[in-house]
Amino acid sequence: MFIAYVTTAVLVGLNQRWPKRQIVGAAATAFVPYLTIPFDKWLEKKNMLDGGWRTTATDHPAMVTGSTWCCAGCSTGPCC
Image (cartoon, rainbow, N blue to C red):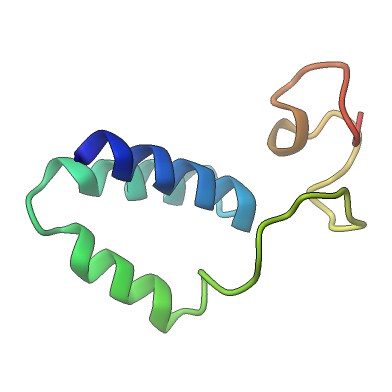
């Protein structure tokens, strides 16, 4: 079950453009029993889960050429 949470945390973090440190923290909560519950409540309180899935490129500052968030350092993709 924790593998599914880690995967989901990373995907949501990338989609919501969280800082790398927060994504790692979200994934780390899966290894401590029940730590995901207060973490998820904190995310909801801070409105860090708002919005839908990003399926198209936007003019968001994180979507600049060479962005590690957009295309993971590759030289191809919608933002490179």
